[in-house]
Image 1 (tube, rainbow, N blue to C red):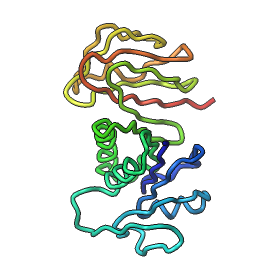
Image 2: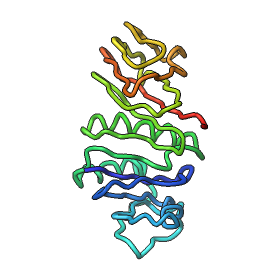
Image 3: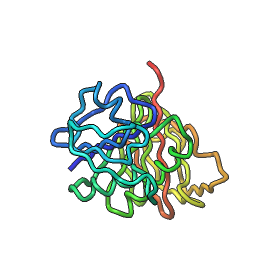
Length: 203
């Protein structure tokens, strides 16, 4: 099942809702989700940002003093509701510490067996390990950043600058701003994990 997580970062212009997807809204993201007409299956959080607890959807209220972010709580709830792929909206912008915490959701998702993708209006971030294959956005940049100390990538296809036996460390910038020239991009991550950042350029 597809899960949708809504966070209180920069509001997106739109949210793609696959049929039968399960939507978990976190705290003040309710403020931008309702005007977009999104049907919320579950609203969670401590509601310190929103300032009140809405009564028009199912809610779970958590104490303000807790050891997990609303995003981590939402991801676990999505997993419990049978979601194995989660698209996260509102993950970018506003507080940088929250954004870094949202990046941590990618690794947590892998540990839980859930594929997590952070979605923006003109960008998205996913996490790759092992054999990676995806359909790139046309006219877009693809940047690869180690998720950890280093990543070892071999045998790429579909990229303008091939990744052949390439080791990137957390102090390297070589993986920034590659380009795709094919309908599909694929490569093999021999060791480590890699953040895949896709940014599409204006027409």
